[in-house]
Image (cartoon, rainbow, N blue to C red; front, side, top):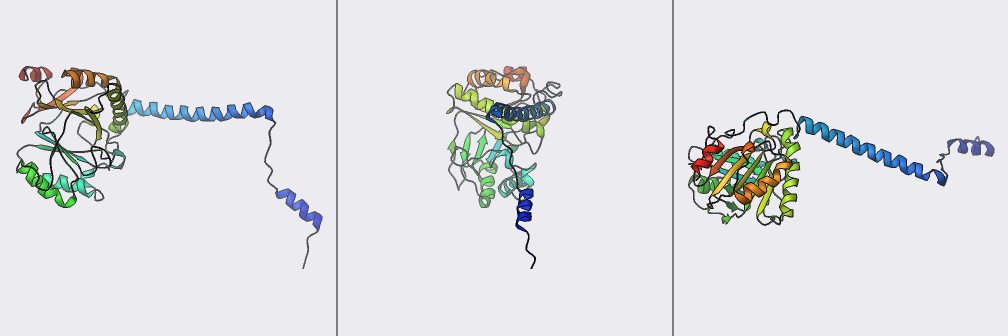
Length: 303
């Protein structure tokens, strides 16, 4: 057996020893500066990416304010919102997703019975959060302002038949009356990047303004899935009582964070329309203004 010489072993060990550099304490400020510089560079990179997103998909994009908005929503008579997961979990077309059975079943049932449903019905997803007023499986119906809780896959057909086709209370659930104003902001990023960029920013701004005014129990805001017109992002729908107490569903486009205070103070609180952002209005009972209407038409006909 060959035995390594002791001195050679020591030399070999020394050659492979990992040596960690040490710095005198006088260099500590420079190290702190380097760390701060690296963090600042990362923040600047993130800011640059955000600015690029804003220029391409956000509120600074070139298509903003290039089209007249009034009449850009197809007429409908009822809006059904299914509370389901969060925007991050929604695929581009949730209604066709094999992994999201409840939205698919409800969408299919509404399409299958469309000839028997007296009012043209839109189906949209909104966020469902456990432990809140709107949990997964809850169904919100506008402009009737009714909520049914915890719809199951096996109950979809009976729900559509009872509530949407026959206009009766759902035999398997208890309808709850919704109060206040309900704001829905398209945030369906997997469907279109513009709403994915604009939507979350608008929701945070709405929440901030709602909180500052003490309106948390009166104005409710939620992200929603595709509602049409991504090129008009930010897209906002507000269902709220009009001056006469009748429920209205107003659609707005090209909404930016700077517009949010006016939407709360003027539209929700005073019933005043923000004309340059206005797209459409749905009135209850069973009244809507078609694609040819204007804000002036609405004001004249609503007096």
